[in-house]
Image 1 (cartoon, rainbow, N blue to C red):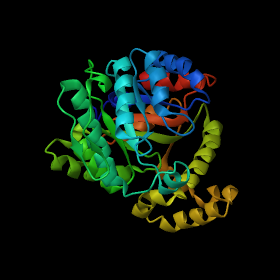
Image 2: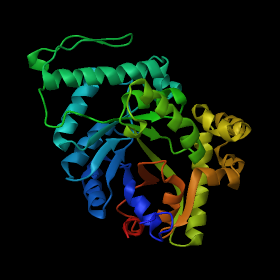
Image 3: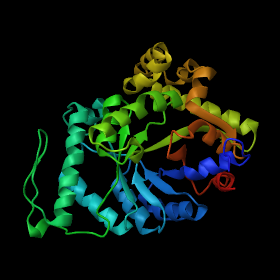
Image 4: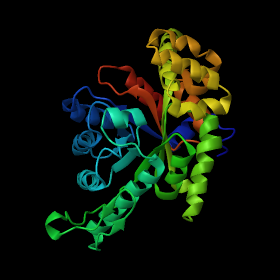
Length: 352
């Protein structure tokens, strides 16, 4: 079949991408029902963030109540836990999941690390490298019985006695997806990880021209093909049953883009397109607490680069047109909710 000429091109390409759901439960008690419903509706995977609940606890509940879905964290904070504590939790989740668990790791920004978690801030890329390497060393120790011996600048691990060793499991290879906004983390993902989590404040140009080349550079360092690194991202969408609902949804996205673009961590995405001055204005408004004024600073031509605008039926083609060859896993930046009947419309559109 010539996909370039086929009228079914959009559906075929979307089928090659995995369609995942974002779960943001108000309480962990909601996770079993939400997870079962997501599996029944036909999603390929679930992602849990780490905002007001623990991502690993959420993942444990999800894998216990599903049979097919990939379950991952998008993301788990890497620097707020010791590598050993993180290794134990992930080992247990993967054992329950029978190989369906994906560990997504992220660094968080300096202000939150120091003022919310009371963790000393250090350059994140070298420390993240050690977290990933130490996790692999710990898991290898448990699976093979080889002595634990990891020595780094931030972490040194050399003690594992039988009493504290959980022993081997059936699926010991836990994929790690690394959250990457800047080039350094993207290189590290290419070097050591199975996937990259792109932030929803992205453009196709930034994924294609900045992050993917950085992943390729990192992969070359360890002598592996760059296509072994999956790209996953949640994407901003303005969706609805009709144009009025799409327009209303678009304004919500404008507010989200304004909020994220005010954070200096995401400045490289803006700079690539020459939108740095907009970022400066948004930052000044945010530090002044003038939140209601921020969305007016994001013009339509900027917003269109960050989002997909479509009805439910148009959405599969819109996703494939924008992300074909760019993303391997896509989720909509909308929390999956049992109360919203339009999720069935979205899934049906993607699967037909």
